[in-house]
Length: 384
Picture 1 (tube, rainbow, N blue to C red):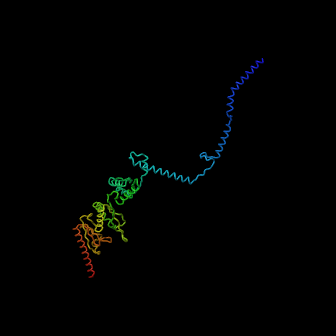
Picture 2: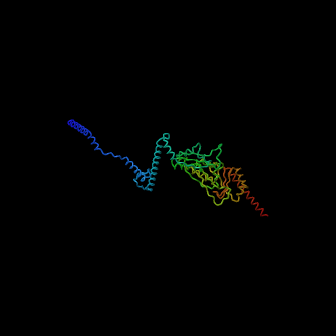
Picture 3: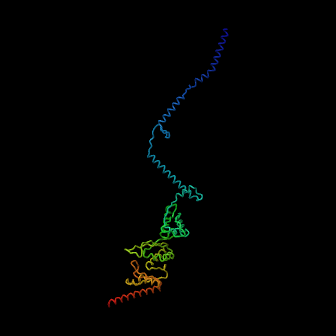
């Protein structure tokens, strides 16, 4: 029995040693590993504290993280920065416009991009001029020739906005028309505008004339403007046609039958054309003013100066101009009695050679008859 107990105890010890040997590696690993601590509660508490701290330090979440420090903004510096930004934007816009202009010039209109077309349209300059609607035909010209010549000379585009005309009737008095001028350069637009104004005021413009075109004028008394125009415009038309010039008659308030106070100022009659033509036109106008005719306007006519004393003017004129009318009707001559504005102190008779001689003879008869009547009256008074 003792041997059996001893053997059984030995087996128990051996089993215990084997179990201990098996458990030894696991125990060693457990001893080497760090202790596991439950920190979930601490992490949650720390997170709440951090949120509270952030809420107190940064109430506005949209601002940058400044670690709790308030940032002072320099307003002047910020304003300057805005101006600098605007300047940069203007420079970028100018560069874009220049690029669009270059693209528009390098390609045809059909191939131009919409952006380039928009840029070119925005760069155009538009001006308008208001003119008398009655003058709009002069601006347009025959089949638009005058307007097209102005466009070609100034590299602009003209658009006429005139009131509608019914049944080809002339425009009513006071009606106005507008001419819109469009161009790329302000200088070209101004030239075209001046050309339109010249057409309406002078009847011509240097833009549509040939090279060597010049402008000049002749100073005359307003009394002679009617003679320069002539009956139905025949005289001025003859000057312009025969000498290839443009003659401009200025407006005046002078009236032949109105009382004249002081000396009336002369007006300037415009003459435009080539240099030689202007010289001839000035000579023609001066001849008309001085002698009431010119070979250019009245071919075949001559003039004679007759010395008539002022006391015989009444008999040459006649009651209500009857004798002047008689000479004009019977002898086809004009008789010009001198006045304070005349260039000659003599009476001038204008007409064909044979008719002038007959008219002068009739004038002498009138003066002789008046002398006889005066002598007879004087004799009667002496005898009485």
